[in-house]
Length: 203
Image (cartoon, rainbow, N blue to C red):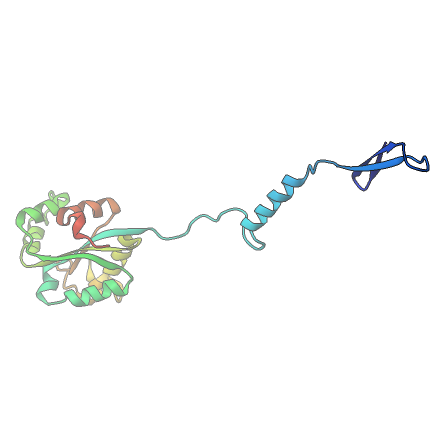
């Protein structure tokens, strides 16, 4: 005989043979399968993964991208012993100098570096200027380094450069404007590769 009680079905088996002739009852419990058990477990895992007050959908990353850019401290600046002061402006802006070397750029190096300007009337004069004295070639690293360093350098014409920028502080003219910085990530990679090997860069 089966009796339902509180979601549990009781199976009662009767047998004779008791001293008073009354049936002997044996009760067995038969539980229904816990159909919702997996749902409860999934709910607990979900709550652990996403506590109250947190978003269920991951937010898109807004972190800035760490990049490298190429820099040259030009002959007019090295002639005035400004390397340390320019480096201080660079580092104060949050950029790291991860490679640096003082060199005397050869004519061949300068012609290759400014090859993009080869058809411009100022090309020859620019090559002469860049080979006129020592320069400091650098690799800079930081969040959005290409755009950041161009902001730190200031406008090509120092008269139009923002206050506090390298060119506003130190440049003498449009040509003698103290520093060069890459204008794109692609050019930064090409310019860095012209003067540095991977093992030269300690990022």
